[in-house]
Length: 413
Image (tube, rainbow, N blue to C red):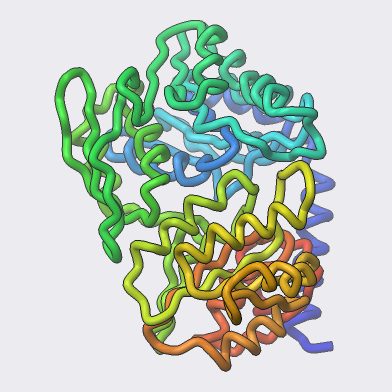
């Protein structure tokens, strides 16, 4: 066994032991630490079926332009990580931004009680964790617990274009600030345009004034993350121009519409962190904005859908071929590719059982000037290796991996 593998396994085992030993002491200590050392720190909780991490990071950039601020690390959003974030805060910090996720009915209870936010942000409510919730209304009820947990006078920042998110207003104990593209939103987006390769251009309308903005984010659907962050900044007392200035050069987190251009000039759009069915159309349609010699969708495992898996994958392939030249299916559902291909243009659909064989195919067929969208679940397949292999010698092609970090930061890469 190679030394790097031995070291990695030892580190992984040590982290598991440390988490097991310190998990509950940390959870018990966090509220005491907060009460004694953080009496003035205001907590902002962010939940939703999509956009939590990007919204959290954008909000942090806005807040730290005026205040001392802190945020949760990466996508950590469960009870233990909420407690860990709290313990990491330095006394004198004005705001802490923490995303809060769900895993099933009751999964948010202890986390939101510990967080006790002054501001609660709900990005959207869509079908996720379908095996744990009977329907979308049950998902909404779980996420609404963040709004219910607001301190007296707390502010709810809600998506005005999402009926389930907006309905949570009835639980808010104080002010409500809405965001969206519809005419009734308090913080309204307009004139949203893709500006490849720079990002997007848009306007923010608030209290009768229009403000022009730009952001280095790819995909016009990410305007909702921007609007949610600006609305939160307004709730914290920051005006719109300062909010927009703070996020002008913000770069999206890895795997969430992040762009990786290889040394040979192949563009990879990496949207491979999560792949719920409802979200797939946005990154696929984005590919129409990229001028490229040839466009390819790498389609991994789709999550959170009900009904026939074949019809779901077929419909996504059909949609994709309006925007790309080829769809490559990867993983356990790749066996459907041959059957789907019979209903599509010749040579437009292929399937491979694993990431390594997909990489071998891409190495033979991709050329400078091509654009590739990676869309799948990171936890299931770690598709990012297909982009990284063009600039480095990828040595890990395992199919089963329990690491929650992106491959870019993995010692086994």
